[in-house]
Image (cartoon, rainbow, N blue to C red; front, side, top):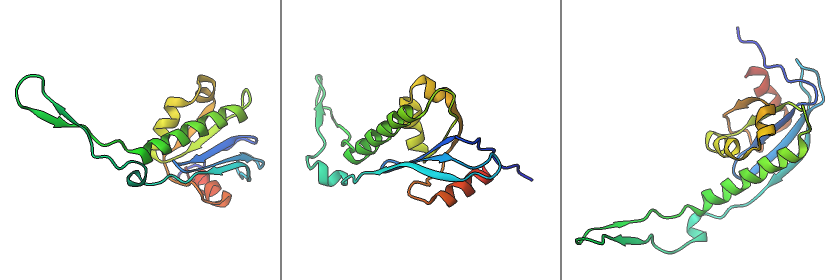
Length: 148
């Protein structure tokens, strides 16, 4: 039988993806978390085809007749990465010294958050869960934490 994750009173829980972010604080007990929204934010990111219309560039070899193509820039992913970086900055601003943190995000967003979190924030992270729960209500997130 799996034991439930203990979520200390006062723990901040960041639930994010590339377009939505919610920061919860546990106002309940360790074994019965009661998550309350501290902050929520979202952004609309247009599709890459709506942001950039040029064809990918070509590169010609300096010797011979060879050429190759550059990959097209994924503007949509770049927008989502910028939003995740802003979420990491916001978490750093809200987290006080010694405040435990839990991060719930899809794998790519989790990687961006890891890369851009300040060292004190990384040290305060007690758990990372690679699930996409962005936009879900507090009860769903609390249930996820109870089974993690």
